[in-house]
Image 1 (tube, one colour):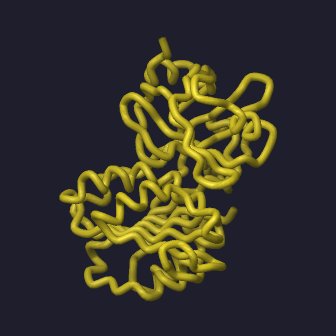
Image 2: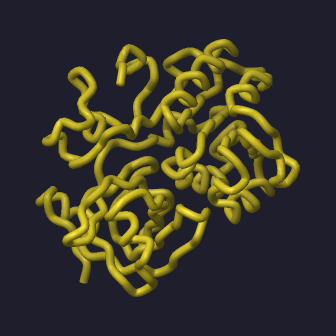
Length: 271
């Protein structure tokens, strides 16, 4: 039987074996793996994922229940190549969870806007799922998701469901062949938003660093204060324990102090 999350965290170096229950192909190079799990998780946290002999990498949890979790993994190297060759019934090794996450209490009864670029949709997917099932806990909810092109679209099956309950704006950089969606960078569409109640609005921005930088600027232009903007910085994380120093920015360890931050507290940090 798998160890509980509480037991695994008594030894932060200990991995537990998790069976792959289902595999979903998202794109040509990105797959979502559903694994057995009894981890106690929060939206936006990450796990260290490994296969003996192939290495270890930090991966955001893209969805979870009390019985399973999902990891959306891009094929980019030795470890992830091996993972992509696994099948249902095979095993991955997990340790964690690590980092802080998105505290839903910060958004309760607020107008919540999530702006996600590319694979940045993965770490906020579980939060979106929770909001989708609990819309009565928000005043309003909207998601903006930007992708390079139609072939890089993630979670299409989820987006179709979400759109039955709240607004999801999809934009692609190059072509406009997904459901007749918008073309252009996500920042262009943030600029077109009409925010009627700024004081009651909270914004989450997740994605590649340039996308995050310029998306935040656009929200600031609309009058959103820095302390109502939340970000997830997932750059250069490695060990998850603040030991290796890869993710250290000034005196801040992203794997421990983040990856989720209130922007007002970290806007002076430079990667």
